[in-house]
Amino acid sequence: MSLKGKSAVVTGSTSGIGLGIARALAAEGADLMLNGFGDPAEIKALQDGLSAEFGVRVGYHGADMSKPDQIADLIATAGRELGKVDILVNNAGIQHVAPVDAFPAERWDAVIAINLSAVFHGISAALPGMKERGWGRIINIASVHGLVASVNKSAYVAAKHGVIGLTKVTALETAETGVTCNAICPGWVLTPLVQKQIDALAAARGVGVDEAARELVGEKQPSKSFVTPDQLGALAVFLCSDAASNMRGAALAMDGGWTAQ
Image 1 (cartoon, rainbow, N blue to C red):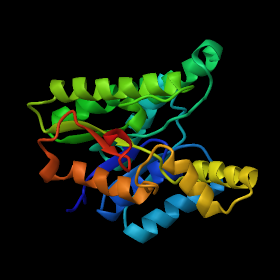
Image 2 (cartoon, rainbow, N blue to C red):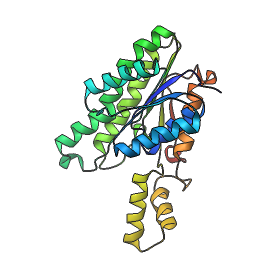
Image 3 (cartoon, rainbow, N blue to C red):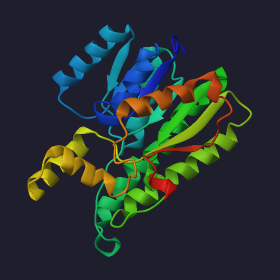
């Protein structure tokens, strides 16, 4: 398919899952507005690299996704610089791990703000233009933890369950329009952050990196292999296609069999 002439905002897209999705959309011709934290020079190099590789316009906005006014400015800036926002991928997220009765209140608030409230604020800002133009794709990156739970992840699990609920409501409210809203629910994904966990496990166990990776992923994921950002990007591209125009409110697991157990 081709997304030439379409413009996409991908939050949390300077690395990991978000960057994988941004690359996949750009490969199909979509102009991009990147968002995320990082070294300014590295982000500029990323913009220039994507633009040169795929022949698309690539902007950047450093919105703090815990700040509703900055999220609104992200969408408004994308509209001005790229002409419109056709595709919104809500990907930015953070994690904190602790038992419920020892979970710091400020960390709860931060996880909910970035993992759930930011999704609402992004949709709220982008949806009117999509409805007016009669076409839009909202893709919320939830998690396998939007479908099942794990210990010590109360805020993350609550937020991701909330994202799936918000996805369904948005889908119902746009059911008779050209706008769709769906969620992708990844399991373990091999990102730089997860690679650090693998390296730490390998050092602690005194085993090789490959063995540590299989041990980490195999605890939950029967495939014993990681989901990749490229695979998630391909799924996001499909959700933008005409073939997916009647997928509305779906929560699509890509989890190596995690939730099949």
